[in-house]
Image 1: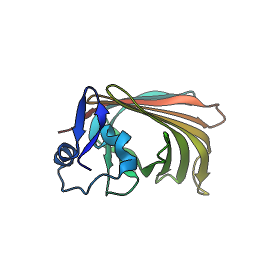
Image 2 (image 1 turned 90 degrees about the vertical axis):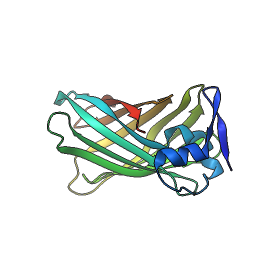
Image 3 (image 1 turned 60 degrees about the vertical axis):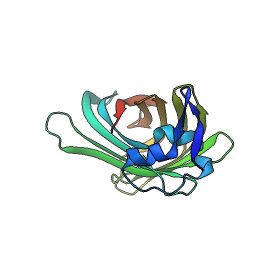
Image 4 (image 1 turned 135 degrees about the vertical axis):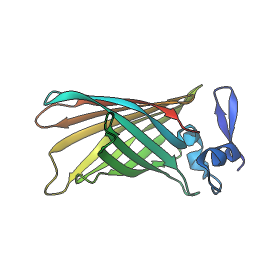
Length: 184
């Protein structure tokens, strides 16, 4: 496969994706075609708020890659904006199902594992991935999180990430938003 689906009036050539990732990537699995706009590394600022804590800002780096199988791997890291000290990390897999639905399996070093289902919608400028947790599993020492929701929207070279959670006795509430720029 040498070309992906149409996005933003053009075609995303997989050779261009390989160049952007800086590696000799295998051919993209056909089930991942709608996710081509996510591939690469993204970086930018984020803001967080929740009823039980003070609002805060952070920096985020999010990388999506593939190995030719029917999933994308993702790695996320956040850091304090001023000091650059690490704050949070996540790793997981987006698993497109070929019918416009998708699964996400995600783990955090804080002892939380999320299993999501949702939808993938190709847009003129990129893609919209909307996910709701089917299950949130906790290690014995993890903080109580009952429910989560995630949304990733690519518009050109901008990725907007939103995260909602129900935790600490609060209902499902918007917690984080980052607006990231594709890195060269």
